[in-house]
Image 1 (tube, rainbow, N blue to C red):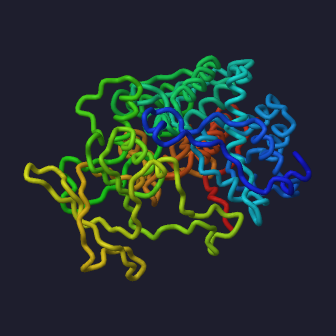
Image 2 (cartoon, rainbow, N blue to C red):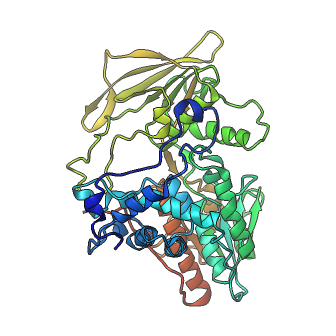
Length: 485
């Protein structure tokens, strides 16, 4: 596979350079400079003939990573794209947005830095689009069956593309005014420019997938009516209910959920007029939450001209190296420096937010925080350690608790799981015949690569329900969980 001695000749990871911070915070373009093809081949050549490629298990899509690494090293870009697309509908998304559990499971990673799988993946995808190799794949025949997909995030789009290619007539419903879900309005352009999403949607439209934006199922069209109109329904609405922080001062003007802020920013970048936009310009910004959404808020605040940015996390700072309790090939929790963190601001851990404080006109002016201590397994503020941090804008990036289930449960008789998600079987089917659930709506907050894998697998179950059998791939059951030992 690839260069038999590649991992001996090149022992370090090489990635494209990020654009200089003073330059990139002046625009909303992606942060990475153009890649070097020679560097890419060197990194692809580090992929070992390891016998059992654990990267396959690390990736829920089962991506054929050694194969497209080998083809990249050989300079066979088109063949690499074909092998990549064989298991992943949207490698241009995952190559930019996925935290790469495949790299954590890389066998080379036992005693060397792992192969730069994610960078090879996105480079293959971008080369494929740039050379016109990504073409529509319309079905050879139509089955006469119809499917509604509710939600146009990665799970819904993956299910829709698979079912369209199987010959079903598929309509994707999205309550926002444009298709893409959080890919459209939740992800800042400096992580993925929207032209990347639009290029894939153009392919899907040419294949025959129909898109219905600006239609909220349960409001504009009832779930019951939708089910009567279509032979099958896929619920892929995501886990979009944000986790709140019910402490004193939560209702003060200036305290917002992260997605309120990011959606408005993305709309503004897209050229829309946003009335009374939440902006960080000229403000002291505090972001609560140390995950990807928090980093997105940090990068956005820098580009909007914040006076200061402080990022607080209630827990301990993760280790920069793999913890002993998360051995290879598990996906470890590591201290990560994303591009947004390089751009400025302060990160503080073991910080428990106690109260939001108001100024003389009733707007947030500061937050009161204390050190976090662990008591009986709980994280609580440590008495006597309180202090204030100036804050004109507070953004809650604390994750998501699950999907909005009330309308579907009431109108269609769906059930909620113990975790508050839509209940479903291992085959993605709900208690309502012909209704399936894919992605975060059934799994809870997760990774984009799991959403795509679930969309593909749910499509196979829908196809089997409609046709009695299926040839569509089903990479994971709904009961699958992240790789563990």
